[in-house]
Length: 123
Image (cartoon, rainbow, N blue to C red; front, top):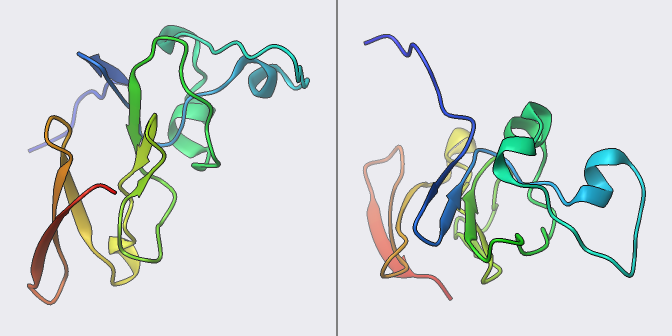
């Protein structure tokens, strides 16, 4: 199978999905506005933000949707849940866990390269 296209991001119901992160307007264009928090729409996100930025305590998106992303390994092996954003990169590339999240129930399943499996619920 050959991957011929990829969506930069997606929105389904109350979920935003992306590889890395979503940008707040002040971060995306390089100035800080402490009193105003404006978030860019999905179509306005840069490729750099969506694919390469790290999960760094992101602000809630103006749409109210929860962001599900990766690209920032959680060395604990557990997903990081901020309520409005969840990082499911649980360090599989360095011997951690591969994580799958059911966004409706907040139950996740994990497996590792040794064949172990486990599950849990987002805290």
